[in-house]
Structure formats: C-alpha cells, structure tokens
Amino acid sequence: MKQLLLLTALFVTFQCNGQISFVSENTSWEQLSKIAKKEKKLLFIHLWGTECEQCNEVANKGFAGPVLKKVFQDNFIAIQSDVASENGKKLAEKFHIKGALVSLYVDSEGNVLNRFNGSTSYSNTYLEYAQEAISRKGGKQLSEFEQEYQRGERSGAFLKAFIQKRRESHMPTNDLLDEYVGKLPVDSLTNFYVVKFIYQQGPALDSRAYRLIQALGQHRMIDSMYRSVPAHEAVAFNNGIINNTFKKAVETKNQQLAYQAANYSQQIFRENYVMGRLYFQRNMIRYYYEVKDTTSYFNECRQLLDQTHLLMTVDSLKRMDAAAFEKNRVAQTPVGPPGEKQAVRFAPPSQTFHIELNEHAWHYYQMNNNPRDLERALMWSRRSMEWHEELRKDKQHLPLGNPAYIDTYAHLLYKLGRKNESIEWQTKAVEAQKVTGMSWTSMEKDLNEMKAGTLK
Image (cartoon, rainbow, N blue to C red; front, side):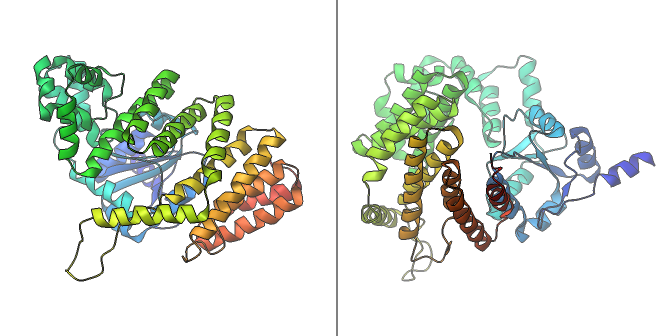
C-alpha cells in the first residue's frame, strides 16, 4: 500500500500552461523508471537552466501546443528539471548532459531513443521527435550496444551499427568512428559508400577518420559524392565536420583546431571571398566567447561589426534578401497542383546581421565594464532595432518591435548610468513582449530592479 501511495503521489502534475503534464521536478530517475515500467510508457525528460529565461519561456510555449496532448498523455511520463538542482544534476550525469536546454526521449531502462537540443515554441518539433522515439521502441537498444562494447566487441559490422544507433539518438559518434575506421582495410577507404558513411558522421578535422581519407587523396571521389547528394545533405556533411571540430576545440581549448574549423568554413565559400571571410570570423568569435577569452572576443567583435555590419545599409540588406529569395525559388521543386501559387521556404539572410548585432551587444553588457565599449555596444543595439523595424515593417509580426532587442538596449543604458532612459526602454520591452503572447515576467522583474536601482 505504501508503494502504491508513493506512485500516486508522484503524479501531482504541473500543466506548464497547457498540454504536457509534468510530474514533480524532484522525481528521481529510479522513481521515473518505476512509473514508466508500471504504465508501459516512455519518458520525456526536459532539462532547463536559469541562464536563458527566454529560452525556457519559448520551450513552455511549445509544450502548451494542443497537438502534443494525446501523444504525450498516451505514451510518456514527462518531467522538467533545472539542470542546476540536485535532481537535475543527477539526471544530467546519468545521461551525460553538460548543460541546458536538452529534451530527452528515453525508455524505462534509460536508453535514449531521441534527443532535441535547445528550445522551440513550435510544438510540432517536440511531436515529431516523440513520434520518432515511439517508432524506435523494441529492437536492439543503446544499452545493449554499450554492454557488448564493454565486453570487448569491436567488429567492423558491430561498430557501424553502434555508430548508427548513436546517430539515431543525436549522440556523439566520433570516438567510435575512429575505432571503426581502424578496423577497415585501407583500400576500403577508397569506396564511395564507405566514405559517404564516414562523412555522414561529421568527422572532426583532426580525427583519424578524416585524416586517413585526406591522406589517400580521394579528392575527386569526394567531390563526386558532394555532387551526388541533395544540397541539404551536402550542407549537413559540412556542418557536421565544422560543429564536431569546433566542439572539440572548445572542450580542449585548442585555438589551432578552432582555426582549422573556421578555415574549413571559409573554404566552402571559396568562390565568394567576402562571405568566406565572414564565416571564418564568426567561427573564431564564437570560439573566443565559448572559452571565455574576453580580450580576443572583444577585439574580434569590434573588427567584424565595424568593418562589415556597420558598413551595410537597409537597402543593401533588402537586395541581399531579394537575391537569396530568387535563388531559393529557382532551386526548390514546386509542391502542389500545377498552376497554383507555390510557397517558398525562405529564411532572409539579413536577419543574421541584426541578430548578431544584438547578440554581441548583449555579451558586451554581460562581460564588459568599459564605458567606451558599452557606448559602442549601445550603437550596435540601436542599429539592430532600426534594421529589424525597417526590414519587417510590412509584416504583422512584432508590431511594437523586437522585445529582446529593446531589452538589450535598456540594459546597456542602465549599465551606462542612464537610469531614466533605461526604465523608459525596459517599459517598452515589457509591452512589446506582452504582444507576443509569451511570458514577460523576467523582463518586468528587471524593470522593477531598474526602478529600485538594484539591477545587477
């Protein structure tokens, strides 16, 4: 009877504004596993952090989507936990999670069936990942692969299957990939399908797998492989290589490796030097920020934004969007009945520039106390708001402006000692946030602290 009462008590739920019901955030893994086995369900574990309140609000909006209700109610026990809390730390440690935000779809044995990094207000994303996880129930799971691996299984076929299982769950594969390549006869690395499989894993530039392929000089075959796959798959090859190299560079604080990743990204645009150089700088700035080399970060930011972004105009950004839209329109295959107006999937490249201005302005607010640098960041912030308004003034979205950009501007004003102006702009940020339908609690909290002079 005590056992039954315990299981019942754990089902005290938190609606999170809607459709996914979460058990208590303090529910341990052992209790979660027991409930899932009893109910014959999977587990949805969302680990969040306090560093990005807006990210949490975005996730909560996504969880509120009506499309999630039946699938999650029928198939999952769900929990949200702060990654810094005692239980959150234990869950993160169990699943080798290093930070928020991460959503895991796992079975009662702890096998990860799917993983989503980050947050989104688009409920269908969580639904699609959930449906994929449900489809992966049964069969050979990661824990079984891990057990066989620990017992010494190292055959090429096993390692390939293990890599595919990890990749299916959005988990790292590069350590296994090097081991797999080491099991292959050297001449197999001239095989089109073997090389394609390796590239699908995004081998780091300093990995054994990548270096061996390059050493064999199969450049013509690699070029043929890139041409033979759809454009999105070729992009995925490159993104995997860059991201895995960059991640390793940050973890080991290896600036030279970060340079190699940045250089690789530049070479992708070898026919467009300006764009290639831009991607090189973006990657190095990202590296300096991640490893907390603030001196290099501040210097590189100033150089990039002053010599690139601030030389642009709204008209030049509009021309950039128009050219990119036409390229996308021509490249996309129409879907639907002939003669009907077709939708074109399109993300305007101009948004990257005002997003970066706001992002770097915010980082200056967080990490820099030099008044001259803060004034520079204030200029970037003001420009980001102006561009956003001009580029989207014909759209209905965000009629009062981008609340995140306004929030950045207000905080910089406050740090520069311009309290009254900061209160005025933070009030605008709160009102703009209310229009979006998302929580404005954290912005209003900052507004109150600005008024009291206690904002840190």
